[in-house]
Image (cartoon, rainbow, N blue to C red; front, side):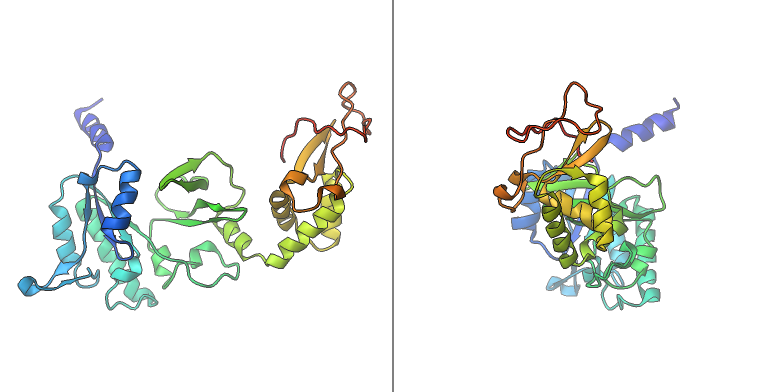
Length: 317
């Protein structure tokens, strides 16, 4: 290993300095407590509140269209600067028309030069627009498409379609490396807790799932409750019935998770069963899962005990 490579490895593991430009949260009562809860080294984090005007009497919010040079020189003085976060980018665009593609690209080009000059990664946060009509995720950023087109990597942070207490970070585009799978997290006592959960949607799928007509989901729930109220049924039969009624499989799978419907295996086939503990349906309308023949488990029709139902080991599918 050469000296240059050894030096590079040391620098990559050396905690760097961070600059925050935040126009929405107070540094004292919101940002700092959150950072401390996550165990951040506060001495390495710098809040840029604005630009002090001549005579030192007024401090205005930094504007990227006019203050980029002052910002760059201030950042250059910070040793080992690794990260710059601008939240939200729309608050720092100055007089730039955030819906004009050429104007936005001009400002972002200067921001890119700042990143190259300082050696720091620049992360810009933006809100989603109100167009929830099932558009691709890359078109959901507020303002001009240039915000996502000019960026080297874009990630969507959104609510989990099946659990509002969780959030999903999903890649929208990535021109810098291998695209990673979406990740799930939740906030627990003020800290981010990453969860080891599989996500079946990509960024576009998440937007479509959120845009789904709520009535379609409710209809799918009603269908499943009615279909399974007398006991378990082969999942393939349930899916076929749903298709015949015009319900999509995506909608049905969402309804299945919302109702807590489980998959149980009989030999080589899988059945769905409605779990009364996870459903609003009265328990009297459902019957317990029958017990399969544990000795001849490959029988097409396992012997069932209707008096004392037993739920065997399950594997959700």
